[in-house]
Length: 397
Image (cartoon, rainbow, N blue to C red; front, side):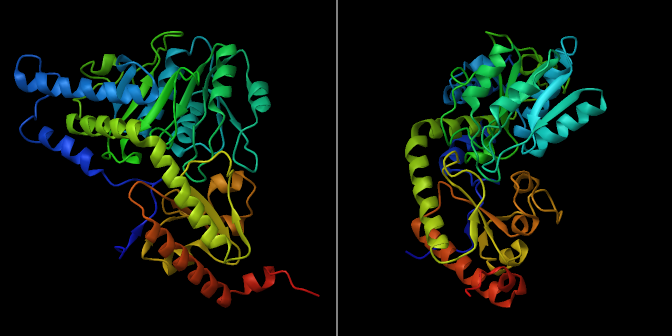
């Protein structure tokens, strides 16, 4: 089968909108264009009905109730609302927050902002596989700790944290547990009750929905979680997030979640198979290539590799008909090596030489074969030109 170039293999960055999602959204741009807060006529009623149907789809995917779902503009806003909202609402109880060094910038920068206002934040280290140490988490807890914020799956290395165990620790100490689940929801099972999660951030564009829409799960009982709003206005979304609801976006998020609920198991199996095929095709033909992060606890479609003796940016330019991410370009236009890889103890040169492959719903076996071939031939060509690789190669006596 002929493949279409360029090949998109950066599905941890964003995903294409599924045609079924787009079909569900389209009527809400034109004939069903009402404001969901307009309660006096049919246009508003239809919009409100669509919003509540979507709320149900999001809730079912994570085993929540519809009233616990608050719509936002995406996971970045959800993270901000969860962390700042708890910090303000529980300030009388304490001012200490625990997170980890490999969180997404939406969590790290939010915590840094709170530190400016006098909050204390503990940033847990991670092991070489990208996972936190639960004993270190327990030791970090103080009488002033009000919030633990740990992501479910890492956006760069796909490492899946032991969320259920962290949830139990949070419950034992009667503190709020927030999870950035932008990368995990819809790809692996998430159950807010089993996992003891109180707040959970979701993004539509990571699960074949539109950009600019997301959700925050806010637990309503055992315990009932209070959060202060960071956007004030007309009291939309139970007063937690004011602003006219993005009805087409919400419909898209709902449809994306509905599809994930039905197809997640088979999709995860397929993504893992393609990932293993890509890994084998590259590692069997290139020496001095290392895997970053745990293979045992990992998102099905994620593969992060470092190629000794090669600059990641040169490799990206060499495979310019393949869309992937480099370990030195993960946070905007900086040339710093990925802070996630550095936290794993990956040396700076190998962090610079890393590539993240994100396999998704629309990737094919043929694309995996093509990408593997392009990577292998480009790495070999760059290594032939590289004195770094010659120096690093083990020489036989």
